[in-house]
Length: 403
Image 1 (cartoon, rainbow, N blue to C red):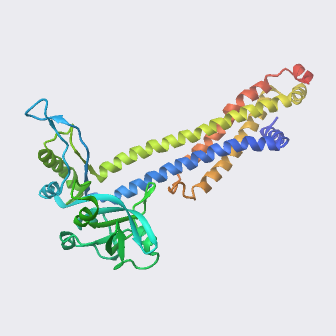
Image 2: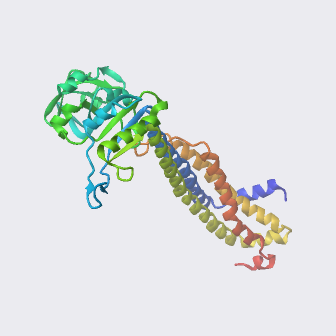
């Protein structure tokens, strides 16, 4: 029997049980579609985080305040050096390091901004004007606040594009007054759109003078971080070392119990990339389980099919069909089921990537499409092998007597 005839018999076998074939195909469709879509979600999340970190600038270094851990002092084995706050004095000391272009002390809090009947909960940062260059921020309207306004603790702020839209709609916010914890702040500028960062938005933000935020909201305690801008990307590693040395000396700390952490954009990007890769692999593995379930479904359906068509198998063998022909026919049926499901799954997965999912815009990984489709075909061959072998191994006499 020629391959064409085998293929024709396989199609006829599938057409004889349309509902059963459709349900079996559905399992593979879900598996393949899930693999493509979930890998795309992981990849989209990874790119979003990487873009957000890259927007910080290659020269940017962030010093974070941490709790640290108590460690014995040099004067006593029982006395401990307590973790110290990150202060504006520390920031001033860092500004003296070679290779540093600017230093921006910062405190952060989440506050509700109100304008008339509109309100928006945004991330509020208190800092100096140099912060905008360090964070690679640009304006779409208005101006940045000035060093003089910081020194005078004036109630002014620059808001992100999302906060501006939520509070003012399409109106120009510059010059208008926004209430923050009962304190009126004058909007002097609006930041250009930066986009999402993972599940959050980098545009739902507000930036005000450090002195103003400390006076009205956070108090004059510890800084949350200090943003340092190196003079060039080539000096980032050198500046990181200088920062660590200066703060170790000021805080009497060692690397093992430091109450601060120094992170550059490249370090964050490397860590985020590694984490995102693991996340994407995990999502792909979870989706692959559904492909395995679809394969088990093919085995079950093909076993039922072989049982129902036992007499047909007996008749075909009695008139000369070889075990190889029977094996090829049932393997072709199983493979067709998985390939049809795989093709539909590819289509469903590609359509699914056109939508935003839990705040993430999926980005298709091209390799995932042929890989998922190829695996679906192999699943048909693998899981259809046992039922096909069972059909090919039947004795004609036993098959003809089957009721």
